[in-house]
Length: 304
Image (cartoon, rainbow, N blue to C red):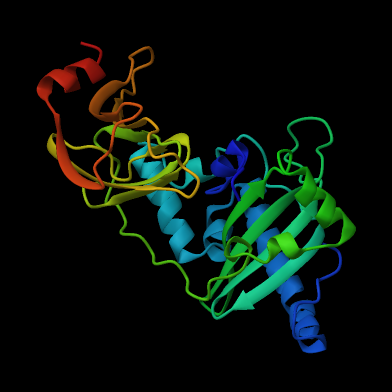
């Protein structure tokens, strides 16, 4: 699941036959019963997004996803729940997709779809994967998230799935864990200062935690994520761990930064923290540091 579209990250928070898994007819019957339940849940959630119905969205979304989306919106100082529906494209419909694998374990379930996943933003798309996650709570299945996987860089996988070979899906990423993720601590109100953590980490996995609230994992990527709860006046804590990934050379450069963002148009972000390792250097495996939001930084954010 290495290629996830940026469109999906926004809407998240946002085939026709069920595959026979090991276990035979019993598993097939169970999946035949499960698939319509999960599809009904997704369709209800999608309809809530299209209609911009806060009540319907809440009714069909897991508690964890609700808290995660609310936290992100408040950390961007946007309006909740209105900003839930401010997405660049509607969630894709399941019509025309093939359900290659539908499985449940404990209170979790996943449904993997293959075909022309259409976000309605351009020409007819090629065949790709859509992975939907669900949690059973409050008396039924609730939508818990989705990942769009672009197979452009994996033509062999695309060819296998077209032929009906679903062996690429027999990995943990495509199967339910059996254990629902915990509901995150909810932030109490809009962040005082919008901030993002940026990480460049070829060949490494970097985990970052800001102010003991905002947790982030980056693996072999260059990416930025919103700091949940934002930054605050004075001292802010940042912890990070670093480990090499299989196949890495161990001498790759690395960067961790925290930026603060102004709500005033035209005011550039302020770099509040930076940890860099040059090529050939050795990063610390673990460290705890602090960065300050000073009156001078606040003045810059306010365009003064």
